[in-house]
Structures are given as structure tokens and as C-alpha cells.
Length: 351
Image (tube, rainbow, N blue to C red):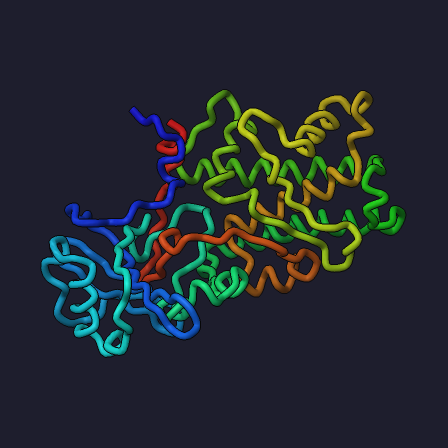
């Protein structure tokens, strides 16, 4: 019986002398340099008793190079593996001796990704030294690259829908000044924006769960179902703003999301949809802006935003102020072959 609801979201334990399972690993080697403590990250694919180095090219594709495999990988110490790696390929021959060696088992194999869920891809830059103490959080995130969009038409349709909502909000701003002093203003046009944005948000969140084999806990999908997405997609760690409307500040609509509590702007959506007369005052600008940004975040958490289509459309209006910092074992490793989508283990997290 599963008793730990954070089973998957917990940081993967270091692999020590225990028997090693098949899969993809990072050999992580900490070393000292004049700039601080650095770490080499060396991807290795292990299966059927053989281990192969995974090399990344400048297009961020990885593959198992030809050559002699690393034998006895399952029984070797991390230092022994490192010594073999340095002899196995000229790229690694100049790596510094380390102060600490450890293996981490990745959540997915090379060429795998979760259905409809964004992660950065492991890049050529990250195979090189990353100075853990001298580089900022921003510098690390700047290394992020995204997988190519595999369902271009659906993504294009979603961005177009978000553009329409943003156009509707721009029309409101012709009458209501886009200022933090106006956030309590409410009205019919604002109500329509909230309903449309939240309807699209519902559809996206349901789609992600269904694509990963998750069924609703009741007759229909509700926010208690959608809460499964919070940690898996790190929704609460995103913060967005509007380029043209700086006085509105930043928005992090999922930051207050707790398991048994409704998000205030989403609760307002339900109120004004089902009982407008009683709750009309909740159709205010503040809730509309949070609903719009929530929709933008769910698209980013599904597709990423480092692509031309985002930059040419929504990216001219919405700015990503903050985004999650992913652990390296969460990254996707792109393959020269076809990417293989697998289900995210939501059921293990919440059983």
C-alpha cells in the first residue's frame, strides 16, 4: 500500500553500493576551481548489464556512442566509473579529479518524456562545468531549452485562444485604466473574461490528467482532481507580468493553492457563472487577471515558452518573471530517435 503521497516528487536518493537498476544516470563529480565548487554532469545509459556514455551534440540530441561499453557498471564505485569514463572518450579526458563522486538515477530514460508535461531538456552546456557557488539561479535557468512542439496545431489553437482573451482585456483597458488602483472594478465584460479563461483552464488541466491515464475522483473533474498538477508541474512557482501594464504588478495565481481550499479567483469564477446576481461584485479585474495568467501558466507548464510561436504571439504581451528551478534528474534527455511519451505517475503520488 502506498503511504507516502510525495513519493515521486521527493528528490531521488543517491545510488550507493546497492544493485543498480536499468535506466539513465548522471555521474556527478564535484571539484574545486578558482571560481568555486563546480560539478561535472555525465549522462550514462545502463541496461542489459552494459553501460554507455550519452554524448550531447550542439543540437542537444543525445545518443549512445559507438565503442566499448562500460562493463561491470553495477558493481563499480563512482570513482571507478569516473576513471573509466575519462579513458572512454576524448571529450571527458580533460575532466578534473573530483572531491566527491555520486550517481543519480533519472526519472526517465533517454528519449522519454511525460505526456503533456513540460521539462527542460539536458543540453550541451550542462555537460560542461556548472559553477554551483558562483553562478546565480538565473544563470542556471538561462541554460534551459525546450523540446520541439510535437502537436503544433493544438498549441497554435491554444495560443490563439489566449490571444483572444488578452484582446478582450485590452478592450476593457480602453475604459478602465490598467492600474493596481482599479483591481476591484467589476463588470459584465470582465465577468465574460473570467468565465472564458477559466473554462479554457479547466479544459487544459483535464486534458493533461486524461493524457496521463488519470480518472476523476467523482463524476466530473474538479479542482480537487486538478490539485494533482500543482507539484508535478510546479504551478505555484511561476510568476508572470504584463509588458505594457507594469503598474498591475506580478501574478502568481497558484501560489496560495492548498489541497482542501479553492483558489479565490477560481471560486469567484464558479460564483459568477452559477449565480451572477448574488456574486456579481466578484467579477472584478483582479480575478480576471489571475485567471488569464493561470491559463498562460498552464500552457507554459505543458509546452514551455522558448519557441517561436510563443515569442511571436503571447510572448509580446506576457513576461515570465519567475519559473521553477528543476533538478537535473527531472530534465528530459532528447534522443536522436523519436521521443517516447509515458504517463506521469500521478497515482503513485496520491494513492
